[in-house]
Length: 297
Image 1 (cartoon, helix red, strand yellow):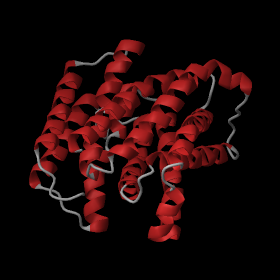
Image 2 (tube, rainbow, N blue to C red):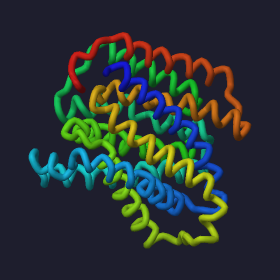
Image 3 (cartoon, helix red, strand yellow):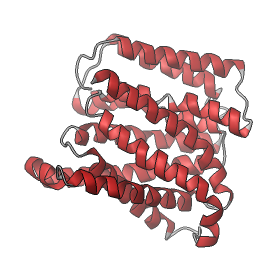
Image 4 (cartoon, rainbow, N blue to C red):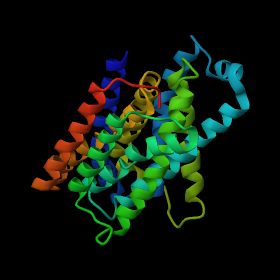
């Protein structure tokens, strides 16, 4: 199951990486808050029939009730809040930085996941895997070409968002192991994210209407059905059998695929240094793949 779960995580990374392009073009008529809210609403609608079919076999509510219903409910609530905040910050950043920068700075969750695990739960990982994290950080820096002195608004916003994505991966890793109903859980978190995103619109100056949604419908369908519905569903399935650290590094490949998609579809070029950085990131992934897991950290 380890290889299958890792394969699903890589497939998720391909979908998420390509989605950065559609997130960028979708904001030609929609604001970042409106796009995020509509995207997750579409995702929830896409997941609903799958979740209902799955519920005929096993009930998410009954499984969670058998563990600690109140704690789990807080966890699901937290999933929605973490995902909504991370997604909105990421969407805002795309109006101020390139697809490659946004994608790779989002993947700062890779070093953050083991650091949070060590700080909060005293979960240790092997020295070799810490080395993979270090290789990843160096590769990301080479790809973005960003230093603190050169950082722009969009880069700072998306880097802050990485904190929320790291928290999201850790909560998913906890909840996914408590249930055999991943698509019901995916529906719950997606619907909760849509609710939070719509609530964030209320105090803002953004407006969302049929006139702004219709031109962005192709982007919303791709980001909603494939990225949100299928992508987050696959993540929840895969993380039942993969550690948080391995999941974070494999999902971080979205940065590589986003850079390639931005180059092919938007003409955003990749410099030689960026290509070298991508090579280092693939090296980090290979280290993870070839290193046995000591625990589920």
